[in-house]
Image (tube, rainbow, N blue to C red; front, side, top):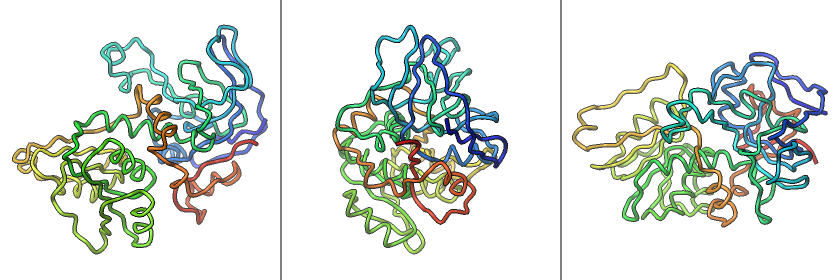
Length: 333
């Protein structure tokens, strides 16, 4: 079978590999689609994701497909089931798992990070992280359940009320998911920042954004109860703090470099009684992600920009491709 293998830092190879065999509690999945995200850029460049990826490894932690074989102990899935996979596998034994904080698991493993993922024609996953899809959720959209679930986890960490005014900083793929989630969770208004007028105008129309702000020529007002930082750069992290009113909540969702720092006025944090919250991966959020797709409250068809092949992946990750926006890989027919 065909697999895109990370063989070293900034090294990807198309290889013919052996068909995997499922363990007793696993299924084999014929991968159909796999999303490319910031974690894949990090892993390709030798940086950590949710965990370290040790080559040779097949990436692809955002994926969907069809069950092609089942292990001897599997009773809840069958061959032919259309599925998506939560990549994160928790040990269930460490202090964090035993105190209802599995996302902080000391022994985290992950499909597409520490074990082979969806950038190959067939891969295995334990049944506890495999989810059957509703009939009205197509496989391309289903490959985005993982990023949606990460955003849901971030939302779960906030205290969201209808009176609140929300701002999303950054109109990349995750920012656009958050804009839809905030609307579906019922806040009073949702504003969005970006850097290109045409792109912002299109996003305002298709996602029902209240106001768009081009930060190359406009200041962000300090009037928001909830601010989602979805870029991960010091400048935008500082903007997130500064955009708040008293009692506001700031979700620092964008992932910066491991050694990155940003500045903030600690007196303002004190005076405004701000809550500044991080969000790591996606515990217990996959059912919600699937439901949001099923109901149409999150529509990823509007924000998936490119469908590419396995052969195209490296040019996207190394920056030589001219493609912009969200890329989803069509792995097999």
